[in-house]
Length: 254
Image 1: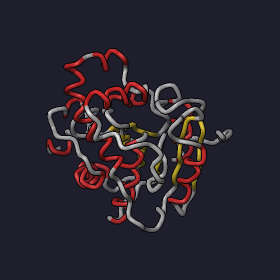
Image 2 (image 1 turned 120 degrees about the vertical axis):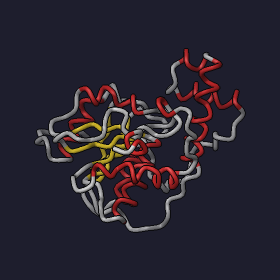
Image 3 (image 1 turned 180 degrees about the vertical axis):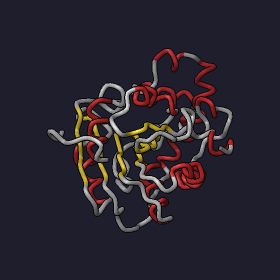
């Protein structure tokens, strides 16, 4: 496998018999946020986190600041999936990347079997929060503290934050500058997950994703805040398995 492709797959290029679930991270996150999912995948599914530039094993690479350029770079890395069904999952920032990737893949004649988005407002929803990627270093760190997504000891580690802030800032810029073009809805199933206690994403936001597909749609609310990939792993993976047809539905979540 060419190194320019292999570098995207830190847990190995998808090669198992299950349906690959390509997982995309939230702002500042790396492929390791899906490590627990990788250890306990749902039946018939292979968890395949992508490693984006600028984090973890790719920390020395410049992060992307625009969704479009990142997606263009991701597309060649998906060649190992050619000719087989696969799905996309993205949390927060990853949801926007997954949505744009689903459109690009559809235009190329290789759409994913399903798009799963999590903790994200719809792509064209008006912004509720102020722009933060232009904040000073001090204000930016305080903003991260308020979001409660970065551990306190990390925020207090000055040298570590000097390494992490450029990628975090680039990720926020990527989200804050994304303006999806006016185009038809996707022609593939879409499921939107959200936390009932998430101050950033409401139930109305989740249901708003229904306008982005002309196929089957489901909005799933979970008793959680914004960062719930670990604490709600079981119900999320169960709904993913049901959505991909590798598990029977014995009762739907709200």
